[in-house]
Image (cartoon, rainbow, N blue to C red):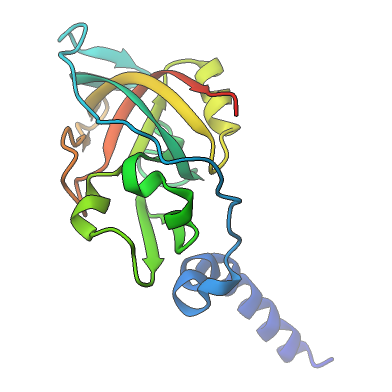
Length: 208
């Protein structure tokens, strides 16, 4: 085979390995692997509580400012490992958790869900619930595992797991340069700034 052609194919393969996972949901959603959605919708209404302490928390080169304590219950609809962005050392995993209409397996089967660039994204046709309800029925969470046990549990989460999780929503300032990461505390927001940043103290998968 021509060397130039080999190099060209290698370059194409490398480009696809980087861009392909981001493009696939848009150009060929039917090729995306789909979880086996089972169970019933999760009845849960999110509510924040006053943090156990307002004192800043030192965490691996960051200062975390508590905003609110949370105790969510819902269905895991996506997880994503991050290694190379500006907050990967602080928040190695994002988890997307849903309740209400967004946690209904019958509805989830109509969706293609994926995560990237710290967002949860979706494609669907003829949705059974309105976009306003959707926006109040899930959260994409940048997780700060409180310890190795929590990190290991997050690492082993799978879509469709029903979980109970507790932690503290925090704003974060990196000690060395003042770089900031802020958390949403609302449940009706969308787009940039709508993700939660959570110092995750506990997460447990409920038995089926």
